[in-house]
Amino acid sequence: MSAPSLAPFILKRPWLQKWVKPLANWYVNAAGYRQLGLRADDLIPEENDTVQLALKRLPPKDAYDRVFRLRRAFQCSVSHQLLPKNEWTKQEEDTPYLSNIIQEIEAEMKEREDLEALVVSKRAANAKSGH
Figure 1 (cartoon, rainbow, N blue to C red):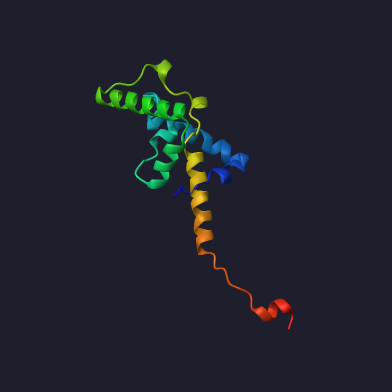
Figure 2: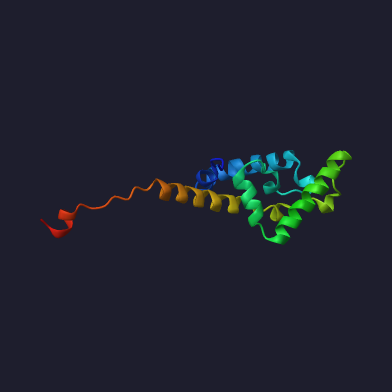
């Protein structure tokens, strides 16, 4: 379910990281979600079962903060305004809170699939006794 990421490949190569970082910062600023007070994980679509389950597993404070950010951003969008600059999401505040839970759920689902696909077979009786 999660999208593949080039981040580990880029982070292992400092020369590539120096080249990509300014581009990544420009992209995040151009996306505009921080000017609305949102975090990157607020933009994850909720239309699948994995994300719905992850939202249910959020701690109550994180769930409340998420709903507050989404409602505030929606209100800004409707009024065609951005938040005051002091209310923008700062880079250090834009940390993942939902994608970690989504990855855990996907790992659980894969493990469940593997266990359900497991075929248990009984050993032959003569193999046990050594005949």
